[in-house]
Image 1 (cartoon, rainbow, N blue to C red):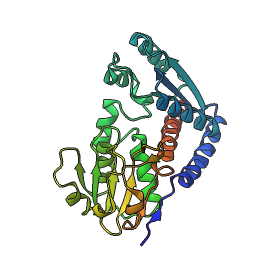
Image 2 (image 1 turned 60 degrees about the vertical axis):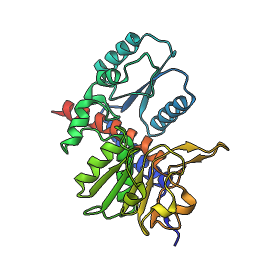
Image 3 (image 1 turned 30 degrees about the horizontal axis):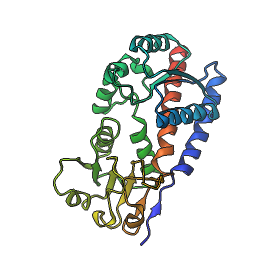
Length: 287
């Protein structure tokens, strides 16, 4: 058996086309969705992510702002800029690219962003809303995974789901979203005993731990849906996920590749959150 590939590139293109149509409709009402991105430092991967986000915005007919600061910038400068963006009614989403330099309090920076413009979904107020089942913004990677499961017609109600990874960015919000769809969810992590015992039970396995090819084919239930969130590099410099794709595809029923799987959907759902914020602005103005 060879698994069906859940193509993130194809789904992303489809969703971005829909978002572009909605953005064009908003423009006729005098509102151009706008995302402001703040980058501190010179991390090459962060610079690429920011460049891709800005380019995706512009391609979808949205406006983007980009502020880049030196790695030794005084945090007060960044906090002042966030305050300006919070107060600007033409800016609908604000994103601070992580990780930040060590002299920054990352939590304080995220909390400084207005919850109504927190399109990453990381503000404590938005995390709480997600926990209560009434999210304002869904964190982008879990949001993308849910769209992929939906597009692949993966049954969720009653499904056994195992998530490997407990981060605030992926693991925890992913669990909340799947619980809301009546899945039975297990979260595994670095201290979990006998990881394979858990993963072999999963109808849906989400790998988000950041260790290259950690999940192998013999750890997967035959026919399971495998979602690989990981992005790692092999010693040869090639991109790979947390799942050993070659062995996993012979066991799984459906699987996401790396690259071309979850990655494109993460940026797509950032655009979706920004657009939703702009649409809420339009609705408030219409009242």
